[in-house]
Length: 455
Image (cartoon, rainbow, N blue to C red; front, side, top):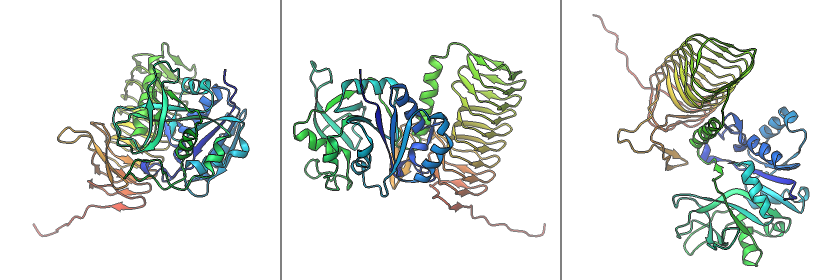
């Protein structure tokens, strides 16, 4: 049984690859299945007996402090300390800030990773030093852990190298969980400011990285055990993964939901087709159909004629419909208007007005104008690609609409194309066919010409 009771969450990074949703918040506060990533982590850490958590914050750290203050009652039985990394210089420097606060042995989590209780226990049971490892299908991950197999080893072989952009076909990558001892700090402090453990001709990132310290330790003969995850942890790197991982969590919850819970204060006049969970003071009007594994938060109203798909999560104080058709994950205070068809992930306070059809990821306070319709498919039926930091990334998804940052808006009859990003506080004007990304705090408008003449 593990004696580890302290954990460090590395949550200081800028998160540029997941914009537009990191523009207004630290990555660890991005909601997945209606809970911030860090809440998933804190709940799992609590369940395995962690008593003390050090959060290394950086980008938008004021919002992290505000969030922790507002939610302190939920974690008051845990000691949670925030330390600030002033500049995003890398994970080695970030972790070194926790040296005075950790015990001899401690866990480390990447701040953008969804982990389970079972995964944490599995790593903790190996003892320090141990590194959790995911297995991926394709050779497309920058950080890699090269492993030599050993069928007789309980830790699935031994680590041959911690590396970056190896030419070797490697599908073993970091899973975002580490069990370490304080011995690691002397290696963290002497990292050279760029990753040097690469192959000839491969340049590593210019940062102080934890991987560099671990490779130094390995080369000096320190034992670092690889712990292969039976099911991969969820690394939230790109904006569409907010949706895919939220869907996965919702579907997994449905597999174990065997009976309904409907609060006695709720009024149900619609038709329920399977097991559901409905909170207090919910109103379900006549003509509503609700499929299996739908979860509806307190004080929400589902207006007449609305259809709710299987594996849907709806938060508190929402208003849906009438005659809407929805599926996916909807935060608190979300409003979906008359005959709107909405799928995907909708953060708190998002609104979609009447007659719209939208599918994607929609940030906090987004306002989708009436009759906005998004494209979701390519004409050649190939996976949707998204422009991220100047690089065109294949999502692997056949269908997805826009990725809309916090407090962005669309005018009536706007039409975002598949996989287009609308930055935070941006505006897509009425009637615009949006073919390219819109940066934060920018407006895109259609150039039209009107002619008035006698008839």
